[in-house]
Length: 136
Image 1 (cartoon, rainbow, N blue to C red):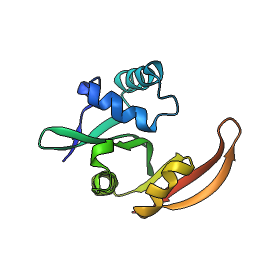
Image 2 (cartoon, rainbow, N blue to C red):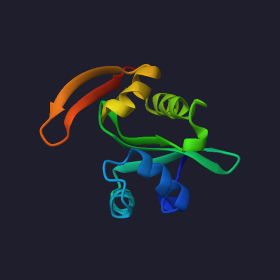
Image 3 (cartoon, rainbow, N blue to C red):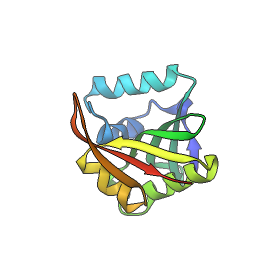
């Protein structure tokens, strides 16, 4: 089930899952992400939970015409079970608007697998990146 966990974000398992996808996966980097979401009303933080276990997380922001995915990550023990795809489907069902994300070479495979179109570009600080989008 896709559940809002913003008020319960600071747990060991959520920290670990964030670290898999964070640009800065250090303890300090993950703490910064958690604090950012706890302190911003416009940012959402959801998890895919089965049998009371967090299997994946998705942070995002809703704009007038799109949902911007900031972070999507699945626990290493739950990968290849459709958790990431379930989260993107849940977002589509909840908002019925364009989903978009920016990612690196490692994660672009996931986005393509779940149906996103992608365009490559060069970010001035991060180098090669991918813009990923999925129409409703």
